Amino acid sequence: MDANELENADDIRREMESALKGGAGPGFARFALACLGGIPFAGGAFGGAAGAWAEREQSRLNKLFEAWLKLQEEELKEIGITLVEVMSRLDANDPVVQERTESPEYLSLVRKCFRDWSAAESEEKRKYVRNLLTNAAACRLTSDEIVKLFVQWINDYSESHFAVIKDVYQNPRATRRSTWQRIHGANVREDSAEADLFKLLYRDLSTGGIVRIHRPTDRAGNFLKKPTKGKRIGQSKSRVMKSAFDGDSPYELTKLGQQFVHYTMNEIVPKLPESQDDESGKTNKPR
Picture 1 (cartoon, rainbow, N blue to C red):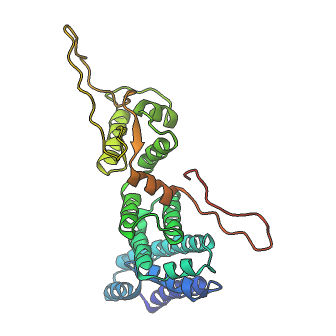
Picture 2: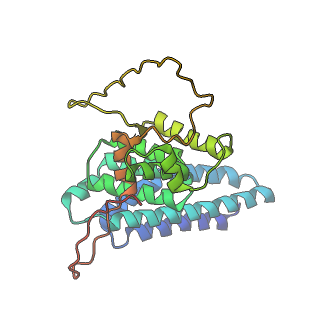
């Protein structure tokens, strides 16, 4: 890799930093640079990698590194867009919001979100990251440790998982059958790959503490045991196993799952210019 390529890589970083600083004040600059500092290829890590590659003069390795740089340029662009969208949705004149966005705790969340940016492989996940950072700055419904767990969930779960979460949120006590019908509509065999995947989605979300089968509670919030049913004489047992699309057991989001939806699937609408009289507010539907 020659000096020109290294200079171009530095130009990418300088231009991004300059764009992020412009017109948004020192608070946004610190916010943006903290984000860039959390990316593996930025700062010292970038310099070390570039030095190691520069020692290798083979054409094949140079081409690989050139392609790698192009990929990072695209990821930086996506990060820059996300940061601008986050800040446009916050009240920069609110001292509470300003203090929050400049706090070490919040900047730690920013770094965690973008440390493994390649995990956000879709536009939907990018929006979840944007919504989470925005809501984490504007409200404090839960601790930062739980918000960090939400960041991990965005990385770990797929869009198929999120489709189930959305449906259960919008349709409390939805059964697997009703959720499947709303998402897919078509009937499939119990021994199909589609049925296996659907069971896996619920197993992941149940194990992860996001959804559960609805259970009644007493006034103190204690879960009540199901009443035992006596066996009837002559009662025959079913010869088939429980369906992947069971229509009897109702599902609900856990309290943690409800908070996850609030932080990631509910947007804060960008503030309108002061010259306009319309009010901005939060949406109530997951996006």
